[in-house]
Length: 397
Ligand SMILES: [Fe+2]
Image 1 (tube, rainbow, N blue to C red):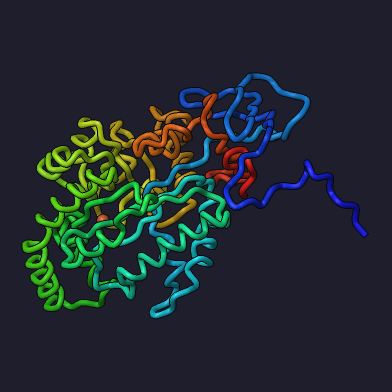
Image 2: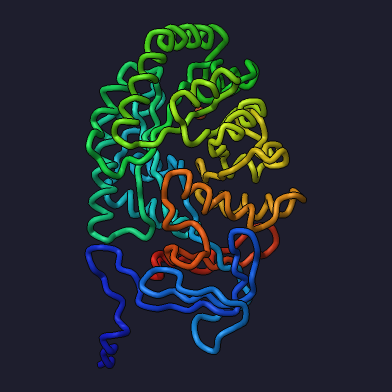
């Protein structure tokens, strides 16, 4: 029979994510908000208690790896892939949340905003009811301490859809909803500024011929004329009343940005032109682009490359978009390929800046007093390796 562990060595499996008492990381390359320090970080009761240069004789030896803040992800639609993995297949929602969470945590993300749709497109099996099922599963999984990361909800509101308001109101009173993005994917409006890119996308995705594409564009343009403006103003008003922050989405023109400013938008998601990104950044919004765009070097929709925005100084936040591991990969890529961006600056784009853009000032940086949300990272070649993840000082991956 194996000897029992002394009680103080047993990690508690309580109903809420408990903070570890004390933990020390030494021999680490500590990536602080504006510099890198080789040394030791000590955390007490889930908070960073001290940061010192030089090594300690005790604690976890990071073997010279980077120690960076836990990543803060504002826009991932990856949960859908786990819940609805094949047409007409719906997996147990709590199990789907756990599987998604595992992938998120192993990518170094300790705070995640799961994007759920409000206003349905025709290209999905998913309904407003499925979105509520996923939201409830996130809540249950969090309450039952099943999750490694902390999860919030980001409502992706397709304002051109007839059922946008009805679906939005189904989330009324859900305190996990902290962010709502106002989207309009009417063909030719924002996401695809070039007709050729739009035609390639829809012909490939939906198998349209020229005639079907023309009919599709006409139907959706009429729908947008009817719904987009009233839905946009209704949701921005209701979100402000409920304390939900707003994100603009796929802004392309100065007029789009001015509308966003008038609606007090905090985050400009995926601007499609340099003009819109510049105007959003200069107006104080956090300009967010996808990690896949940064890593691949171009946008899948034929729009502005995130790297061009980074070079011009208008990129503030990197999101995983549709590939969870892309956030960390993108930050190291920016440090490598853009001279004027240092590693601390690139890491801020995946931690401190997104956290603060949505009001989470208790995390996102290696600073005394902030949450001990930490990621040990080793860089081998161009692809970083996540070697350990801690949230509130407790190991989660
Ligand atoms: Fe979009």
